[in-house]
Image (cartoon, rainbow, N blue to C red; front, side, top):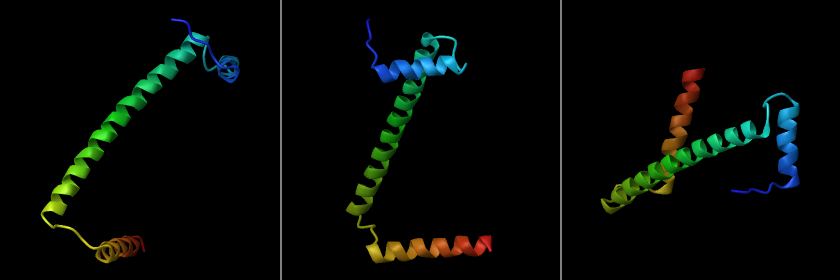
Length: 88
């Protein structure tokens, strides 16, 4: 596979080698791919968690277990006040 880098990407790789973080371009690319793999896995996990939360929220709405906006904000403000009192 042949990959063409943009000039700024080449400059970045060269800078990473010049500052001693990496011995060569292969090391830079290897780390970049490992970070991309990690990011992809974390994103997939976040998407799954978000879908589960949405499913739970939909079920709560179906059971009419919902709060109006004013009640929600009041409860949230109470939590903030309690947290502030604990710190003081």
